[in-house]
Amino acid sequence: MKKDSKASQSSPTRRKFLTGASVAAGAAVAGFPMISKAQAGPITMRWQSTWPAKDIFHEYALDFAKKVNDMTGGDLKIEVLPAGAVVPAFQLLDAVSKGTLDGGHGVLVYHYGKQNALALWGSGPAFGMDANMMLAWHKYGGGKELLAKLYGSIGANVVSFPYGPMPTQPLGWFKKPITKVQDMKGLKFRTVGISIDVFTAMGAAVNALPGGEIVPAMDRGLLDAAEFNNASSDRLLGFPDVSKVCMLQSFHQNAEQFEIMFNKGKFDALPAKMKSIIENAVEAASSDMSWKAVHRYSQDYIEMQQKQNVKFYKTPDAVLQAQLNGYDAAVAKRKDNALFTEIEESQRKFAERAVRWDLDTNVNRRMAYNHYFAKKAAPAKKS
Image (cartoon, rainbow, N blue to C red; front, side, top):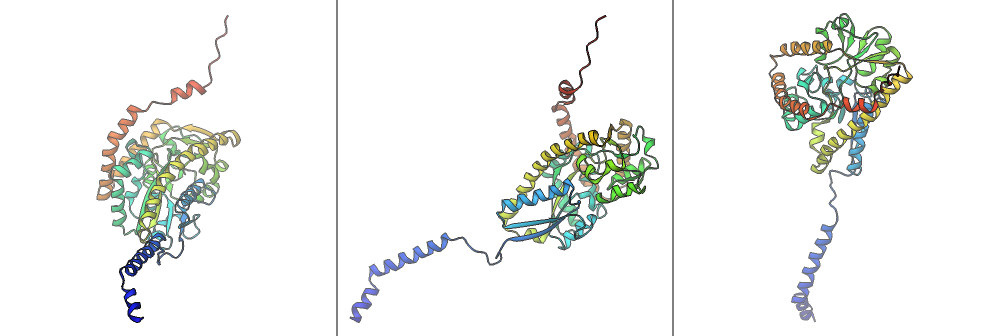
């Protein structure tokens, strides 16, 4: 019996069965998703924006976080806190770089004190580019590589994604309309970045303040005038409560965009698929933000006129030209900053063809607007 039993164990039929069972078991195991020992649960990130909780800018930060949270199916959960929750707005770069925060939402010019070349991402006339064209330069014209080089030069341990093209920002809020360059002289004025030099050249006494501090400073008389950003943010911050005059159109920030920032160590540790989701979520959020801006800014623009008696005026061309002259003078002072010069030359090269194409190609929409919405002159009465 033992001999027969042993023979049966080594029979071809028996071996074939065991081999088939082994393969089937392996296939069954392969059919189950692999469970990463390093990721026992969702990855969580704590972020901060540089905006007050009720500002539409903070809403944009929340919009991006929701897109990522949804697109990863909850595998990555980003929580976004408002300005000041962990650090002051102007200290965001340090906090993210050190890992105090995992990421943040702001604008590059807020880090101007670290390297003034950061102002070139939106704080200036950008050689006539608008904010969307600036993003085109960043993605396709060399800006992305230059920004990585810039952050590396100051030891910033971050991964940065500029996104969200902003409309041209107003010259600012004033006690009375600005009709000539001389009206700027002596004004205690708020702005940031290289625009400090531009407005200083125009005769203003400039003070850089975060968004949430501007209106209280104007209310106490510490500022005579100020610029921030757009109809919705300006309205929410309370500008119509301290001023009834807003000057539209300016070259000081006509091409600015937002910045989504990750701690580099935290970002690099993410799975490749999750990094790809984030990069695509940035572009989706960029489009959505620009569409939401058109909707919300236009509403608040009309309501401030109808409900809060705000008067909007176009900035005179002479003031706009003075800004360009002031910007050129500010750039000339930075010729010893090789990185500043390299970035500016890259932008100039891209803008020379891109802006020419834009101006030659796109129709001026004023004619169509006037055709449909301008008040028609009453017909002359017959005598």
